[in-house]
Image (cartoon, rainbow, N blue to C red; front, side, top):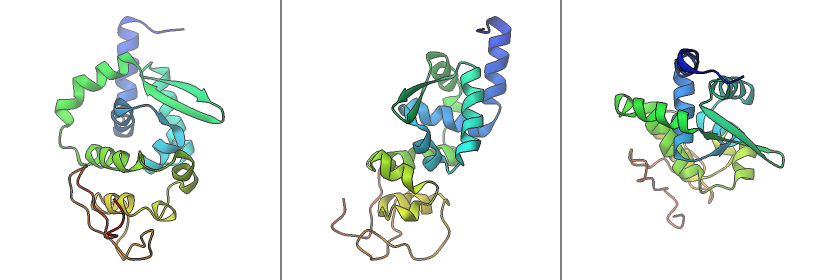
Amino acid sequence: MRLRGLAALASQHRALGNPMRLRIVALLSHEPLFVCQMAAILRLSLSTLSTHLAALRSAGLVTESREGKWIQYAVTDVGAERWESQRAALAGDRDLEADAAVLLVARRIPREELCAAGLDYRKLRHPDLIAVARVYGRLGRGRIPTAGGESSSTCATSASGCRSGNADHD
């Protein structure tokens, strides 16, 4: 049964009353994503992410589709409207900036590889992703192995300005 009027609006506000759910809708406003991609980007367990997605789906803010064994989520028109109404108020939020920066790098990683790594970016040995994660405090300190075995932790704070220490990697 679809909620209408005040009940629908209240349901949407309840769903968006959680900061993580706002981050999910913000992330999906960029593009549809598979569950394991979101889990890797947001650093959430699949069960926690599933709970958040169920609340957003129930409120009519996101929709799901299946591609074989993969489940993809997209923001609905209503979800996009709700996000747009909040975007200006959340400009400059560090978590949202970090999510967008990680998404830019994660787009270049094959879905199967990203999903297989789960929450451990180090398993990917992808220097740009590790560097972005470090800038936004999603990794601990220390030397980071790159694909070529060297260490790198250089990344501009701009979402598009990431460069690895590995010169032959673009």
